[in-house]
Image (cartoon, rainbow, N blue to C red; front, side, top):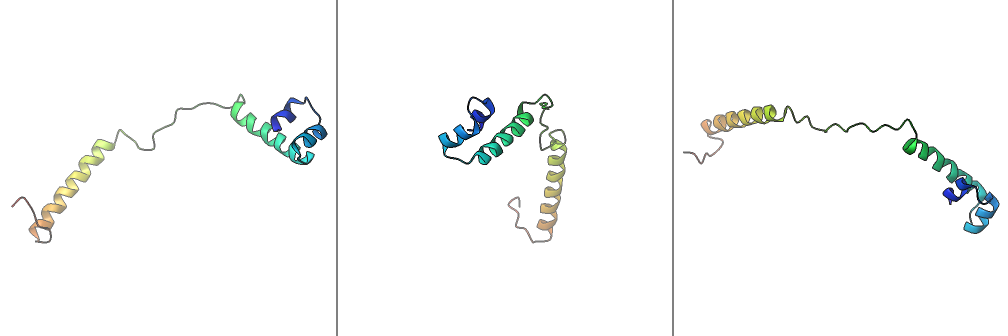
Length: 88
């Protein structure tokens, strides 16, 4: 309906009668369509590459760090007798 209003082939009164909607609603929808179309298809719309949410360059270092922490804690808890170890 908003697209038909943008095309301008029929008057607002004709569109309102055809779709059984108030002319003010058609005008509102038409303006929303035009504003949205400018943001999508406008010349200012630039496609920028989307950066990954996680920095994949630092992941191996972080995995290594966490492995060391886990090994240290499991060793310390095993020595304290708080963690039963299957390695004994």
